Image (cartoon, rainbow, N blue to C red; front, side, top):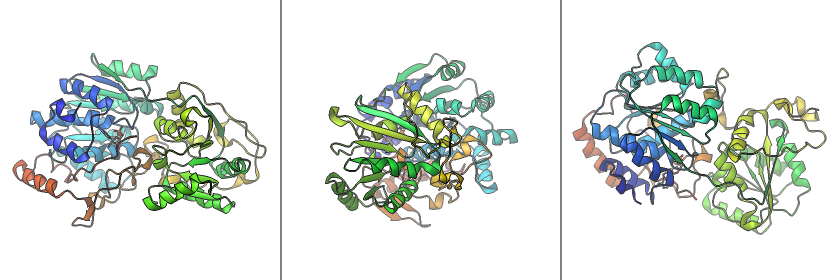
Length: 495
Ligand code: AMP
């Protein structure tokens, strides 16, 4: 099957062409026709399956072919800032040739940011991607009109309910057009999600994408421990595993870098792989690892897909991965080709929610390991006791995370947030936002310095086409938030 078989508007196909996607993914193949037909839909799919395009492409098609504009037509509700920013970027890329406008609305930011969001919401932006709390803050001001909304999308519904967003969702849904098309995506379908789906959707089509489960040969287990003690425990675990092939995964470049320094400080031969390391260097490190010149490799999820080293004995998740699928990919580095291997996850109380989601996805509990003497399980309540370093100050949260008055959507801060669009870095390759979500398996596109100093991928042919379209399209869809859409860049193909 090819993207042209869906009958999508040619401006959308132009955008997809630049992405160089070889073919639709299974969720796209199954969901796009239903959404184009106007059906409500329940999609069981993980992040990483191509589900964003599965709903964005047909909605762009509806918006373009209807010729409607100057009001909020589509609302995507998501649990985290990070996901809101990510989806907005993807929409910008796919809609580059279409003139459809979008804005991400999420917590944090200053008064200027809030005013910019208000301008977009009142100025006729086509698509809004929002976290619940921030959207409610705008709704409460009385100027958000969603009475004509045509498309409602709930993304990562299970996670939103997990995070206690149900009351917020109810408030928002009360304010929007009841005669809309509704789509609900969720990695898992527990009872509460099905209940929500029943209240929201009419005669929904169902699409389910099964994600492969971990190989049988992986012996999975977990330690419940404080963040401050993770390195100490890891060093102790590694001490009696000399000669084994071990990979330790962290979720951010920062956490991996700091782990690398600390393990080196303990006298271990360590290699590090993240998207900051040049390809040539990565290859050298991998060669050293294969040749057993390194005791341990620490890596971001750049390495969780696609590396093929024989005989990895142990995978350690130093950070609990954000998605169950990343977990499956990480631990899939061991026990390849029917061999045996072990995967140990270090879980702090902050990691608990993510860990529970992974267990829900696996459909089983990951066995807990008793902590060695001298370590404690901290505040997770799954253990007791103390250790010499328990009075140590908690380290700052990794990856620039910031908490906002206990509200879950405030847990993550997008590093681009305060930079404004002029200086936004590569919007798609993912390294700036969430490395785990976008493994860098392809070289980045060529870049030039655009006026105003922002690096953009180059595509001379496309920029000509874009200019001409802008001329005859006038201000349609672009004035609402004053946000120029960046040209699409090709995204990584999944393993
Ligand atoms: P998502 O599940 O929407 O987060 O997408 C995961 C990744 O798959 C993103 O990097 C997308 O760019 C990429 N992707 C989406 N659709 C396709 C496709 N048809 N072929 C290859 N990659 C895709």
